[in-house]
Length: 260
Image (cartoon, rainbow, N blue to C red; front, side, top):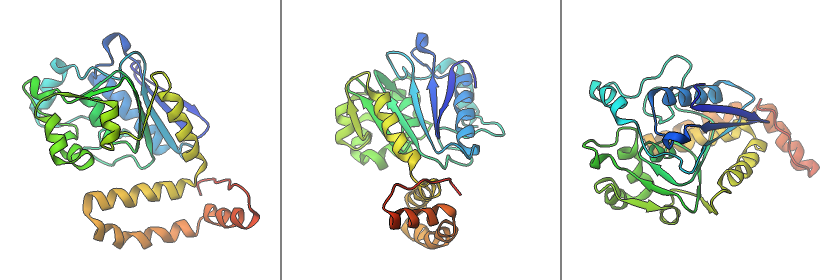
């Protein structure tokens, strides 16, 4: 990891912390690389089942360091990743296959919104303000907002914010379905950990199957997902975890899953 991104494993949970509060966690190329490495660690490590993405300081992020990213965007190459890394925006290469929960506070602008759109569950402090500011800076979003914000917020709702650069509140994000929990400021990480612990106790193969099937339906359509559904179910049903699920049901106890 870079000094701007720190990781910590707690049981089966990987906590990914953006740590550049003195710059309001403005995204630099080095920070992007650290996030891509962390997502790669989540992807590869069989002991990890879920991740929490959060940020140090008053704000999740003020945006990007545009002067450093302008040459990259002008090249037409997109965000650069290296072997072993996973693009945290899900724009290039293989996407993460384990769930990511995001906790936000304060300003969550531009790349903060776009990385959120590529997570599974979102918890916002009640002081969070979201915004896509690109049209105020002479450019347009290029890390997923034009693709995903209309899907997740609705076409006209998304255009309302993408075309103006106006901010919206945590409460508005909750109303529109972009976040699943709004909590008092300072409690967002605790709530994210609570949700992560529940996911970590669930069957890892089942959880990953859910993400694969729902994502395929979203990107390729229901017919494509249906075609793959029962194919992917076979190895899961033959797993030790599936057998444990049946045993725990018969024995009326909580299942203990191993991810195999």
